[in-house]
Image (cartoon, rainbow, N blue to C red; front, side, top):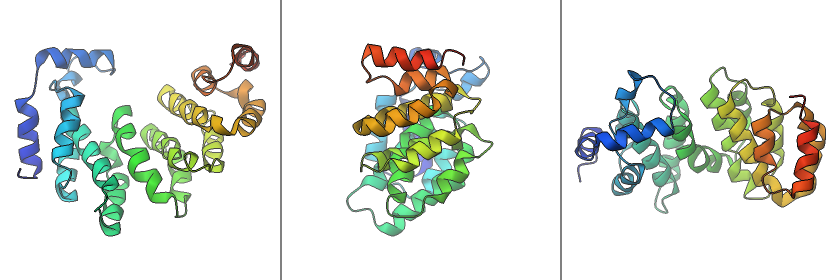
Length: 236
């Protein structure tokens, strides 16, 4: 297959369906005119195409990211994630993909686009590197950059490294956006393997946490423990 943005876009257009396009209304908030950016390709098909196109050069991935079609940008992020994880992907290419994600975050502008690559590209790249960039992202005016900051910590959590997840969660406690609240709660939930550390975080911050963040963080707790922390957060 010709690994160009033009060819990948043509493949996506060949899969479009009005029925599938309408289904996106269940998962995304947009006005009717904005819905034109969804052409109606099932995400399973997008991911299968991304797997076929795993060797797409970063320059062509960037062209896909520039498309107004949501499924094209989803394909770009899926290709980026799969390519970064490839066993034969060189350190130089991984750096290029990491840089592309951050440089074109303006095109990573919905929750699914962040989720497709943040913890497959950004987090893994920083496992053995300084993590200052995540703290800068956590303080960004862009809500999707803040979501990237917290989701990237999943790679550290998987390795038993919790400090950054808790520190970034603390920075985002007063975030105004539900999409950030949900991501922070999700990451806090994954720290449950270190329940004492999570308990300590909740003891300090439950009363201040947005409700959806707190509920997500408590998903693995027993009902009585969950009720105790939720009671602490009632004022919020």
